[in-house]
Every structure is written in structure tokens, then in C-alpha cells.
Length: 195
Image (cartoon, rainbow, N blue to C red; front, side):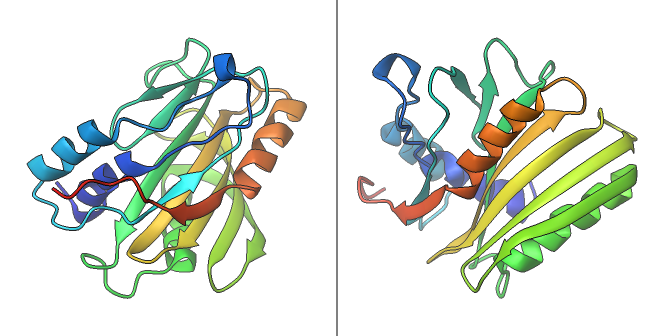
């Protein structure tokens, strides 16, 4: 298991807090289950922060897997048109990693896996980077477009990303989800019980 994958599991501690009605909301993840998973992976210091993300009203997203992925409606890992995924890269295992470096790694990975890519940095500061990425003619997946926000956190770089299969999601849906990603915030994780 590589370092990024190992610490991506710690992203179970991400809470997604929505501005939706209770019926359409995704609740904060099960922290007791996260603690058990983290303990099994022998991670001594769990994530100290989490991402807060407001999803558009009236949309149902289902949580799946580790690292956390959200699928719209009845979609899943094998059959999706749009998804939100998360990752974390610990400073302990990746000394010196920054949000900008991690964004460049993701963009480079796309360029290696797709014949055509286009990327644009939408926001860049010392703490945050937001980028958009379009990929077509890919080797191992359908072409898709993405928007991602990465944060330089206290203990790691945190990322949340929305992906949509090219031609299967309306422009208005992509725009709504882009706004959700752009307004995502990194907040202190305060409900963690010691392992």
C-alpha cells in the first residue's frame, strides 16, 4: 500500500456538512468506525482537520469506500457519471508536500493517462489551490472534467474533487458542483476520540 493510499484512509475523518434539508443531507461520517479503521492501519496521528462542503439543495449523494467517495443518485464506482472524491497526503509521510505540488501531480498524472488534457488554475494562495481539468481520449477511463480544491492543512494536504463524465452531465450541474467545490472549507476536526 503506497503512502498516499495509506493516509488517504485517514480522510474518513472528513465531514461533509451540507446546507440541504435533512432529507437531502449527508451526515458527518461515523467517527467511531473511522477510529477503528485508523487503528487497524496503525496510524498514530489521525487527521486533525476535515473538509466542509455544501452540496446543492435537492441532490442525493451516497457515501462509499475509503478514501471517501460520494456518488450521485444510484451511481457507484463501476458506473458513475459524476462523483466527489477525497484524498489526504500527510506531511509526516510526504515531508514538504504542498497543495500546489499535489495539484501538479494530479494534472501530470492525467496528462500521462489521456491523449488530451487541459488545465486551468482558478485560485492560488499560500493555503489553497483550485484547479479545473478536462481530459479526453483517456486510456483507462472515459473522458471527464474535474474541479478540485486542495488545502495546506495543519497535518496534511487535503483535497476534494468533483468529476463528471464528458457529455453526461449538464453545464448547469457542473457549474453548481463547481461552486460547491470552490466554497469548500477546511475546518478543525474536534470530535475525535483518542485511539
